[in-house]
Image (cartoon, rainbow, N blue to C red; front, side):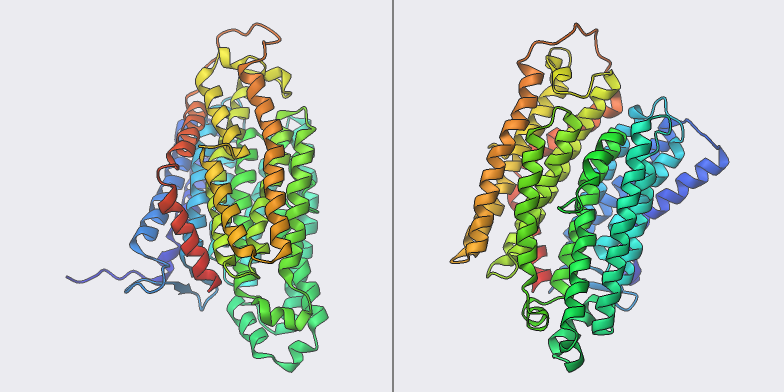
Length: 512
């Protein structure tokens, strides 16, 4: 029986479906400007994101991007400018899942807001950039995908034009984002100046060849790598480019806060994983610049997780607490890059990738619950959430699942992803003091996070309400998204083994 062969560019179908969905939304808006048909707009966005998810899962199961599989394997597109492998498909799945949850929740959240067609178009366009970023294999295509992600994100944060906090947050996000983009692209120019190439695999080839001209430009290359790390730190909300996150997440619509803190963070990390595992082989790069770049990520990981968790513990505003919490989780994932210098570093990176998938459900769900509370007119502080479980037990039960999972309390999936990260880190550590310090920091910060996560659960379920609440509405979209995220956080438990294996195999393939 003949096998239908598709052109190589079809491997980018998950991203292309999102791009097509954005164009359809633009078409709807051009036919009916200022449309408030929430069912049509939200339904189109949800259908596009679910289709992207279905194709990405299908490709993964079929072996697209997997090495050693006949008829498939890793697919290079446009002379290696894009590459579709297990790493790309894994993150395309995360991005599509978060986009689907956010667009479902937005159905109710945007009920009385204007610019609805523009809102959904910008969300799907940003998701398109994130998916393209996962497959980018050149510093040029990476930068284009980065800007395709960032520009819609700035507009989405400030889309509530009548809300001063939203506009101010969008302006701050834009200014810091413009600075980080300038730093990143300047780093790209320095790397190009040192190596004469922009494609990641060719950069690695030049570095490993030991070319004399490259050896004389170790300082230039080192500064370029440092600037690339700075640009990536902004996208992942890592120290010292984390200042935008609490302001942006607090001012933005809650579904956008969920979108940026989950999907955008995943896109930033796939960028980091791709660039540093492909373009800068550790031994060759260290020999040229004289510094092990994994040490930079080790320092960033410790500082980011510690600052994020301590700042979260001092917050009275629930949304800002979740924002600083997301910074702490960025520190956990940075461990995956910090451990690449050790034997078994690929497994640590795979465990970090697994944590990002779990995080995509539990963190998105937590921010969407905040969106649900905003829909009900609940205030922003912990006290405002007191006794909410009396009126909304199912939603508050879902929030308890998110909080305990984020804290790493067994038996929730957040515990198992952190446990996998910890065990793989200990296995890789051996006599490596830096990795042992990272393992200790992971445990200490996870224990600290239990304080502020459980504080919110206590407010919802134990504290007496400050005022009598009338019967709360049950918006279909928001409720469905919150419950779906909670169910997936729990359902991941029996599927944890196969999903973790997929993450570990994807990391091993790209590191090798």
